[in-house]
Image (cartoon, rainbow, N blue to C red):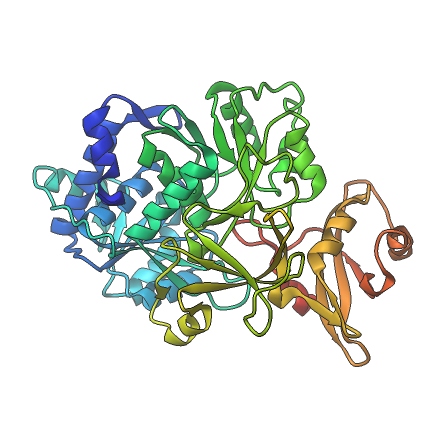
Length: 502
């Protein structure tokens, strides 16, 4: 039984248990299962979606996004979640690249989809209102028409299930193809990582259009029959209210979210006793952000992975989080990991090299992109493009993106190291470092810095402060003070934009 039938299985065992809680409404596993089956009938009978067809969804987190996702799994279609922060031009690329047969659109995004609808004649556009909209399908209306029929269950673990376009920090996004088997393997890795059980309450605040929000905890919760408290987006006020009132046992908080929580007036006195652990990732986690949770005796679990790995590949657990603080932990239960040099030879202990991942959670390919697939997948190993190393205890450490490494005067400089040090300056809110071509040195180090409100610091002040903390060859040649760093939807810094600015 693959992920396609998880909710149905749970509904048979404990139909009254809450599967989803959303904006004050509780949805039982029995009702969740019925909504999925109704949506599968809509896809199959009203929209003529068949096995292998791509079905896109554009909208903020909502239960119906999960209905469409699991409905696609039931009939063998491929779910394509779209990042609602992108432009219509970017959505056009993803829809045409994937050959999407249908697009479900949340209310706030209908207007921006009008040009897409005019351009994409072969795509069925579905809105969420019961009202008629010329040229659109109404999801509520079509559900009423099809709820008395059913669509059969397609349950082949080899079927492509999820098409995730990479966040595009390195250029044009590519579509990672993940099978039902990959999703199940990832869920097992998550259960092992989090010690997740039937009794857990999962607070999901990350966007479900990203593999992290969808798969690190959310889909795994339905694998074990846990409860998911779902938020449309991250808002510090609502997250704190959920921590107080909903008593979640597990959640994911990105490093970029932590200052927003810490600055909230309710934070110091907030009761966090229900939390068994907090998961984080997507970038290097500075020591002070680890202490943010460890000082309150809550394990902070770093997870490492990518869209192409579903994403869980390396992680910490609550049992080892305190003693391995600052690392990314150990290989996931159903993953193998290697660190290799430029000649694909295994690196020695403490020697930095490229991180390779192997396992059933790894993508099968990039969508219709054989050249990129061949570059990234070799003998079953996914070449991540990330640099890391393994210490003597077998624990892994992330160093930086391979492409972000700066070679200046023949020395390798890892921007992440400098960013962590700069982040420790009392007046610096955050910093990002990139390389700039330099005739003499090959590359020069350039830092972009966001200062804390009400502070004034000069370039000379920062260079003096770095003096006893980093070797001079790592010091930035240029420092630019900016109001905010450019980021993508997962709060990753867009280094390509900074390189252009540099």
